[in-house]
Length: 301
Image (cartoon, rainbow, N blue to C red; front, side):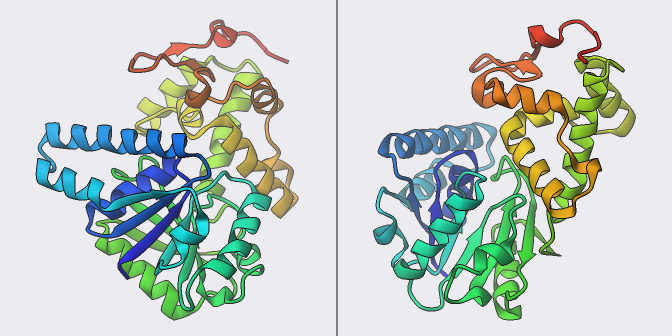
């Protein structure tokens, strides 16, 4: 398995492309927008520069990694020779289903089709393909070059052979793969998102402020990042989408998104990507400033 196609050049897509390329795979990185692809290569280059500065890689490996990545705006060209396609597009069911329908026509027989989805059913994605046994989930964690976990999700029809192949491939990337079954939220987000949602409810109900909530979880539970900061990092729109999948999948009120989260996403305050969420973000700065909306610990209801 030498040729990898990654669909989507955003945060997850460029991280996945970076990781495969650094480990010797040829990567076709595809997006509909060339400007987005150019920004993605700039991001990968910057991340490689930081690795060189830290001494974790040398200049030769940096150059080899970049040479292993080719960008495309045409999906058919990018996917036609792929042994493995990893879809890392927007967390939107219809977009993903449409992409996998197209991959039916563009990929060679026997290619493995993977989705980096954080919550959408692999079984449903596989149902629109001609070979559902070859469809699997590869849920990488952000930032991909750093985080060790790969959640490997088996759809209802995913074969043992495909699962074993992806488990071994993940190890070649110096990752730790964990096999899970296809139910809403899988493992990571089924546990994580209710915690984040409860933290947002705790703020919404005036129990404590942003800094207090995050400090309790960092110092009391040894979390490296508080749940509200983590939500900003993930993207509040992504958190909302995953909670809706959990709520619709299980029909349980405990997964219902907090109204504050819904309002923030509606208003366009989605975290780091928008520059404002529970915190404010200045490009290039590591300082966190609590958003004006939450600067005082007041009941928001």
